[in-house]
Length: 493
Image (cartoon, rainbow, N blue to C red; front, side, top):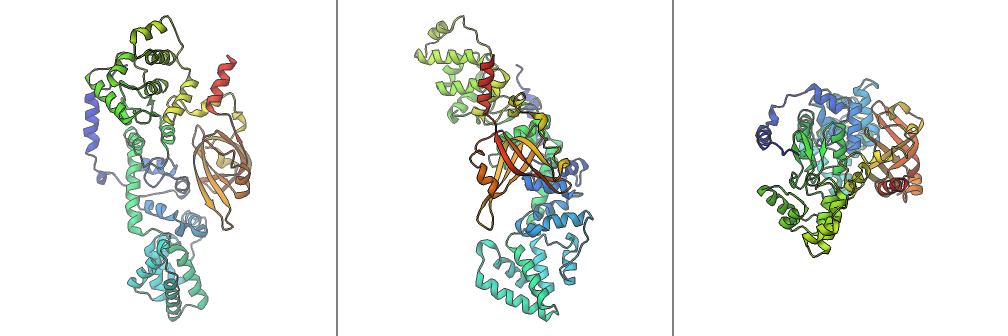
């Protein structure tokens, strides 16, 4: 296997280390197209299921729309359907109206829907005669984390009195107060949202125009929104090849190798930091030529060596993982005697791991699969012709379907009645699907919903507008584990 071109790698590093994000062109059509498709996994503030659904519905047209998209999904702005109300009005599907005519100058730019905290402050000024200082005091007093009930009641009286003096009816005054009370503690100010919006656009630009470099950085980010398994599959969908870890080529982190991404050493289960560093240091002197050379120079333990072999990290040394594992066992069992280990394993041939075995070992030792999506293990087991793919769910509005996917993430929520409901995200080979488990359904299936799956969900498609579709779960079936699939296939041979 050819080593990465060090000069080319250095040139890439120099080229991208001096990127000035301020010089990115605004409103790049390719970036906007990617964002409006919801293909924003890895992009700052744009990758949650809710955010990606919002982007698909909102149809962003320019940089100035990013702060609105980021702010509109916050609990205050989205309260009681305000997010969907904004999107429908923006698309011309609903007329723009105002709770009171005095709110039009403040809310005109956001179609009559309050999006930013500053708008709430201006409403207090226009509706109740508050000074901006008083309005800011109102905003701070109503922040959820430090809400002072007595102070809020005092401000409410002041607001109602001021609104009456401005000529509003008692009913209108109370309606507007409730309107801003529901928003203030859970919203973004425009400066905050604008900063986030610029960063969001910049990361989307990088993903769009420098995908390999960007996704490598995402995979190396320990504080990412999703696990690396999700980003590995996103790379696959983007056409970026993922190379397995290799003792002769991998760095500690993920790296770029001929416009492909090489898995680093750090994800490997139970491979210590000291051993990782020793591998890199020794390899700089000269490549590892065989198993014994590697063990002698790195002083890696038996378990570490076995894990490296099982996840494919000895691919540049020997093609057969089973044979290397036998040699490793013999070597350590014979007191690290190379001659004895070779004698015990002489004449033995062993077939390399199959594609299915590689996937299982990678899942166990890396937490993700390099070889292929885990669902490929179920090609002959799951009746895919009876499933709807993630990209076609929109077409089945109000219909019952079956969807099968691999676990991505979940979010729990307590209803007003104190019952637990769950928002689950599953992934098939084409993308993700968001599934809603209402309390009664979740209570019936919570014991099944353990682990990565895969799961088949039977439910009804809910889609309130184009670009948003989720599945209201009714029944769940969990398929056998990946290792059980491989064991069954081996038994059938």
